Image 1 (cartoon, helix red, strand yellow):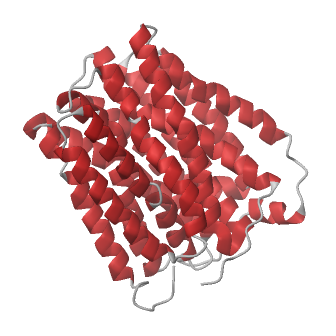
Image 2 (image 1 turned 45 degrees about the vertical axis):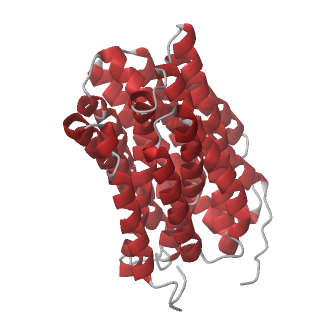
Amino acid sequence: MSEPEFLRTRLTWLTYAQLAVFGYFLYGFGPSVPLQRDDLHLSNAVGGLHGTALAIGSTLAGLTFALLSHRVGRTGTLRVGLLGLATGTLLYCLVPELPVTLAGALVCGLFGSYVVTGSVVVLSAAHGPAGPAAFSEANAAAAGAGLVAPLLLGAGAAVGIGWQPGLLVAAVAAVAVWVVSRRESHQPAPARAAAAGSDRPGRLPAAYWLAWVVTLLCIGVEFCMTFWAADELRDRAGASPAAATAGITAIVGGMFAGRLVGGRLALRIRPGQLLLAAVAVTLVGFAAFWSSSGPVPAVAGLVVVGLGIALQYPLGTVRAVAASGGRPDRAAGRLSIAAGLASGLAPFALGALADSIGTHAAFLLVPALLLAAAAGVLVSGDLRGRPQV
């Protein structure tokens, strides 16, 4: 497999920055949920409704992205997403009432998903065959920014100022990047082409929907780990609440490293093969994390989990968009629905199971999702000589 040319432009770097803002929010939001739950005195299942609200917003984004992109362009949709994400973060952090925090999570899911979906189609259109590498690097930027978020939330909780200031950094960053993106109005022709919608008429093919299901399962794994690993560290490994929250950095750090390396691997290895390898690495890391009774080996397992998770969402996404038959806007929009379903249902299901059988046993949902994703990749056939998607 020859290595495609990969030239990063101003549009590439700006898109990386926009996705990094959402990455900071997302990887801060996950560990904030147990802290928000404690502040509001909620059960595991009710606290998990914040993830469900985020998911509903993501689903709404999937239904409306193509329409909004047609009206304001892909890069315009990214800018709308940044402002909405800032607004939702303020609601979630500053008004400690359950209806308002749920509304804030929903707004963040809606507008944050515009940022993610816009990033997919802009980078895929701008870089063509190098799109998987570009999107992997963009997600590395998101994970790199996300490395800082759990640390700041944990530090705030430890010193007594609360976790909220750490997450509010996302709102400030969103506005700052929005200001920069407003100045990028004069773009060269390739950038204008990437920013414009170009969907063909017709339905999305069956191959797309199979890749969609695989992506849904992979996203479910990521959200289960980032939402609930802190609780497992507290309950089984004996970490303090602040240390357990900061421990989520182990996952995000693994994801950051995996996506940096994965950007190069994606130029040389077929996405289906690389995705199967990523699932296998995640299973190994999960086994180490789940079987550990001390914080050090548990956190080491989370690093390996992060390395495996790193490429699952980027590869699942680019495989699905490539299988869309020339309908990238609708394909990426429908992937937001997958993200919404996975991020809402999977953590909520794990939380509900934890209320009845305990967090440790409930975590077995994760390997079940991973094995189902691997089966979906195998059924798609790209390891058997069929056309690569």
